[in-house]
Image (cartoon, rainbow, N blue to C red; front, top):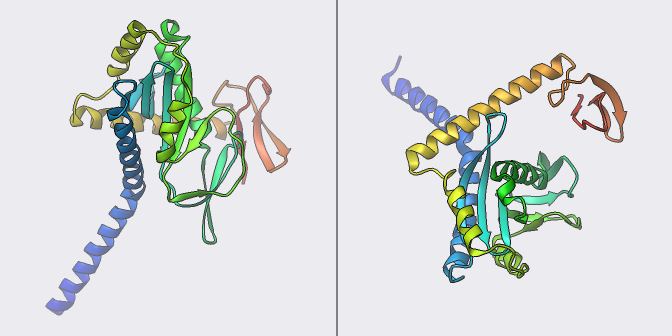
Length: 264
């Protein structure tokens, strides 16, 4: 084989591998950039608030089943806790408060993603469970922050969460003026939140690795249960039903258990 041809083919193979690697990391990089931009906005709020707000970033909250719930940002104030979920999507965004999925539209391409309000609701549930009875009275506010690349095209009203851009975050915090946490409680709460923060990059990497592993394990267990027509939430029997949006499998313990799985 011609030497030049050999090196050309080798270069093409390396470029193809590099492109695949970049593609595999794209979602992670986009998400990290979004969290960085929101963290920057939070830091600016902190620096101009004279100690009114204290932020915690990238927390891994232990859950009773041994897994963890990863929270992007938490802001502690005299008015309660603000749990922030960051989304770095582009294009048009369609969604409401109760739908399981929202839709991203870029030109003619449509992609579904998990409803971030429901996602953050799960984070808040895990946080409340971990904080325990001592802090059960603390108000927790749900905030979803999209970067300006996303444009909302629905007129949905969000009653149980704020859905905003980074520049609107300060306005959300300032809407709450009633002091509900005394200084001593606030200090104890801050100390507890510090315990779920990584001390360095190595520990953060390890915490993230364990978090991803538990998610994958749980997904496999869920798939196995569904294949056996068993509800992964309560162990009930999954029954094929027809609904407004098509055929799905639902738990026979409904309405006590509301697990569903679409078919097709």
